[in-house]
Length: 268
Image 1 (cartoon, rainbow, N blue to C red):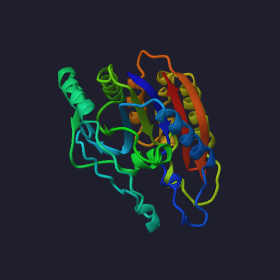
Image 2 (tube, rainbow, N blue to C red):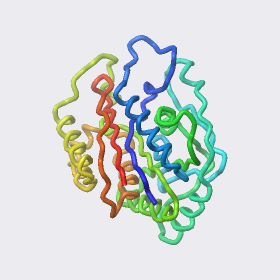
Image 3 (cartoon, rainbow, N blue to C red):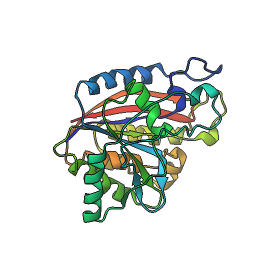
Image 4 (spheres, helix red, strand yellow):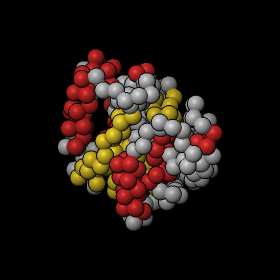
């Protein structure tokens, strides 16, 4: 069964790199939150962790890794060399993956195992702050660009159904406000319209109300440009369908007013 779920940022600036460029943002509240959450999750002795990353995607199906060996992918662009030397070995949750594959075929949900990806920085960046080493097998899952949010939510329900006799944690990563096109390298204010929409989403999530969180109009959605759209969050919402989790909003930080960093835990 789902024990814990988490929505966390995945910015590489969270990485524990000793030689950091001048001016790189510090995120002490987020880093402390991830460390505290990781300690609590370690005590649960989870059987597997499902990690949903917006950097892992396909067009017409939702991809996942079913292999025991998971390749770490350094999909960082433009960072100093020190950011490319952080190992995070992990093994795959093959039993859970096989269950999920079988259920997906039966329910006609477009979830498909692939071999062309692995554990990208959208997954291993927050994982490295949660756990110095992976505490259990991992199941990396991505998103399908042309697959509806509703189908992603149904895929999340399958993850929960495949985990009924297991202790599972689910982590979705990304930023609800992700406007790298506005990145200037200096502090700036988030546009008021985007700030209002972000507040609406966060208020709904703090109440465990995913349906309301997703209800923003097209223009406001474009102002926010959430990383991966709402698809990672829709997968997370599906795993919590029918449950009434306690919600803990651990940290809210940002990078130069261009990227939001939200750390929100759902405790079942």
